[in-house]
Length: 349
Ligand SMILES: [Fe+2]
Ligand SMILES: [Fe+2]
Image 1 (cartoon, protein in one colour):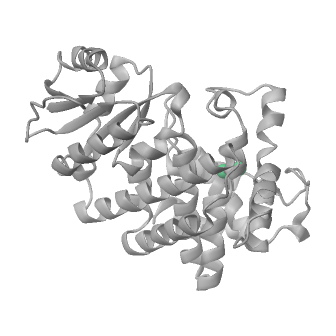
Image 2: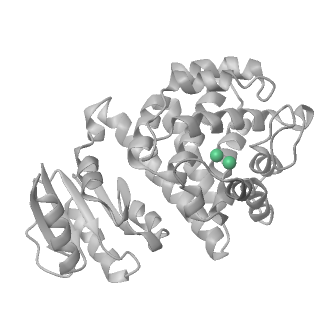
Image 3: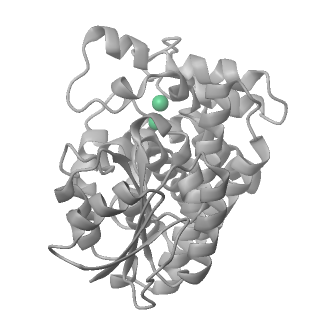
């Protein structure tokens, strides 16, 4: 494979070259300097400070010329998490957080490209909708972190694109694209939206209900913007204090969104109550069945399923069959006729 490396400093450039040269043919360029760009590159790896305006302009130019390259990996510094959004806006297909280890980077490069399975057009459409969704979700998180207003219209627009994509190409191509190209909370929100949309379609929901459902799914975990990444992305079990912190996210999301016009009461309700269970054992309000709406019930099942099947670097991916069995075992907590209807979405669609 030929890998083209792009960096904003000589040190970063040579470090990356050294990592890759043992296994790949490497070409490289310094953002401010001369390029020995190879037109036949199979992948591009970028490491640059995305907070610098000149770097963004230079990267746009680079990608204008390398638009045919389907694998575009960006390395982002740990402290510059907000620039993940910028990376996706520039066309990243994968973002890794620095310091990245050599084995992980090589594994990402070796991971099969989106063109290898399924129809290229379907995956490309899914990939674009996923990128748009990731940008919208990233922008929402940035807005919450910096106290700026949340852009409701682009989030709903991205939700609608996802719905169109799934109606056309099905859930499987969506799951595959999202799990391959997005990580952490972005991946989770995109998966929940896709699964909820497909579940809604299979139930024959009317258009206004579908709009409520995908908006609720896009926004449902926005309160996680207030939770430190160390807790959010912690591998393994959380202690009681960390769990209590995580459990603040539905109410935190509700507080953020209730001040914004354009968010309906049903969506607000879904954001606040997507962790409630019919038997009253959920949070934050320990609601009982009669107070939990249909949209919330659909969203909760989609949310649990997405959390079970998502790709995390520290655990093996759970097969869809096994995830569905777990959902089926949650008697008393989830609505069983809905769980039965979900079977087709979980296993076949
Ligand atoms: Fe949640
Ligand atoms: Fe969630």
